[in-house]
Length: 295
Image (tube, rainbow, N blue to C red; front, top):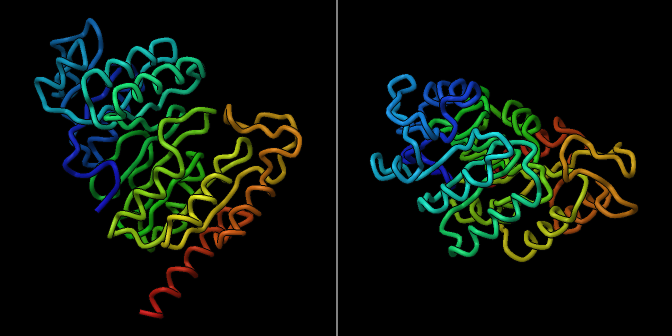
């Protein structure tokens, strides 16, 4: 099983005719993703490797039954693209675009909430998500791991890839890159609960980073709601105060949002936290082997 994205997902690509859209569409198709349509205004009637292109998302959904969108649209047009996808009643919209103004993200997230949250948004500024062996919506390399029983939720794309590779001998149910912007559509908590509810996920890796309080809130949620083992990593132990590190949301202000504070909050509720990605993988491996030994 998997969360959010499965082999039955019917995926369309907004911005399919752009260079990034075309390149990654081909990679997703090669990974087994069922891509049924593309959308580029003014390019309707064209095809990309046999995939039909439509002028609007609504037209694409009506013609193909798509339920998922992957957004490869430049920042200035991203808000309109996401709102169009919400209006088309897609169940999942994966926004890869980096550099979307926070005001625009707030606007399309508020719009999604006003519709009753029928559309789940992943991102923006994220690598997407993959359910190995089933479907890949985004830019996550599909060949670094296989299907398994670990769930992964991460703010960082590259750390997602590293943990997938280091734990490839166990494999993953789904890996979700939620993005590192100050506002994201799907949070650590959303993914933690989805993995908790998934009978084929045995344990969870949660990757956070400096800035904000998302990891502290996740720790509170884990204590109250999550019974499966969680292993964590927080990027940014050596980050200087007041300096944005990579992601727009990764900035420490005074004593707020430090890696040490996040580590302490997670460990206080029983989450084992690695000081490096490799140590985190080792902790997860120990956790899984211990569970296997007691069965």
